[in-house]
Amino acid sequence: MTAVLRLFWNICLLRDGPETVPTHTWFLVSLIAAELAIGVVVLSVAYPHYSFALSLNLALINLAVTASVAWFALYLRNHESRFPATLGAILGTEVLIDGVSALVLGATSGIAQTTTTWILGMWNIAVVGFILHRALGTRLWVGILLSMAMVAVALVVAGALLGHIILGEPAS
Image (tube, rainbow, N blue to C red; front, top):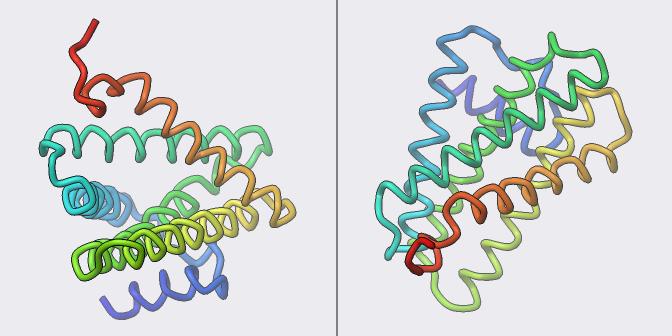
């Protein structure tokens, strides 16, 4: 277990790339489950008025958009075979960063909480950008722009599918 944590920590520190991540099916399934679980926890702590179902749906949307955009980018570069390692690296690092976010959200409030959340969010974008840069064989800035696009697409899809629920408005 410590080897896996060390692996993802080194990716978070931009020392290792996605090529070092195991691609076994059981490993990817466990990363998906961990990301969904920690995503629901972070959303529940950050937005206590959200129901479990809403938090789960938002976590599922984030996971689906992340996987879809990563696969499509790899497909365009003819690197589909790198998808399992790329997705594993993204999910593993997001589990670590989301775990830290959950601790920070629970331990701080006010401006400290907001600032730390933004810093961790930017770190996550940089890490995912680094992973995509390595997987796609492109420049780092391309990976970071793609990572930012993932966040934007996830927000748009979540808003389109669940916007009325998130805002507490009746469906039309």
